[in-house]
Length: 369
Image (cartoon, rainbow, N blue to C red; front, side):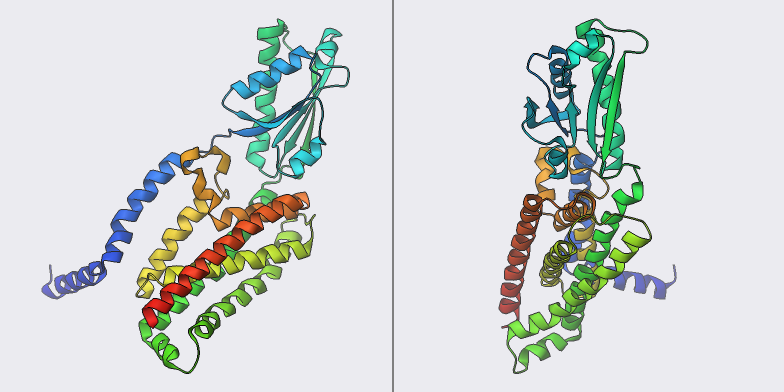
């Protein structure tokens, strides 16, 4: 190999690996992420929250529900037996993913007459899950009739009255576009914020600003508020494309969506600022941003359902701002926005923003004093 080329390669390797933080980012973090993703990621549809309304004397319907919960696909939503709530409201408020409703006279009695109808309500904001739920329920019902009731004709006399809620056409774009909106919002806030601050540190101009007759708070807010404004400016643009190009419905309040977006943007800018405090140059900032974004997207529910993840790693989704903002978008745009759901997600985002901002300010105060 050419001596000059060998010298350049050696110099670049030494420069890239000189900083212990860079060695950690390059060699330790990928192992941790690979382990987490190998455990958490699954395309299999499971842990579907199922509610069922039926009379206590409806033995076949009770067996269907028990068999569904006993399998590995469904988990109880807390609503089973005599109707105590509006089935549609259960799905709109995200308390259940599917609801089984027995006929008024009872599923067992209608089966005895040779003709029965079973109503199934499905939350179709997740298209993949909605398609799987109907197949699961039909298989469980037929298996129950064959095993418990001794009914096994080629075509059981059962009609499924399936109501697909909030996305009746099962349009994949309606499910995916909110996820794309979430990624675009975080790209224009978190990534730009951290790179802009690290660039100032790398060029030495950040210390010059600190030495000027202004407070550290004014410097930090002066570097972060512009990216909050940029993020909020992007909202009407991407929302217009979602609604008018991809025909994603806007069933909830525009003001609620705007406020939720503002809280999310403040959170991502605060997190971008926090990441920048650990980075000495733009190379580290780019790597740090990628190492945050990749798991944040994986654990957000954009690609893989959160409920499919084992409980040992599911907690990471609860501290992922993308997961909370995506839930807010889907709730407001597709379901109309349940107040309790909105309040819980917004409260967590506010807490994440406050913690990230407090730690960032403390680190800047310590390193630049």
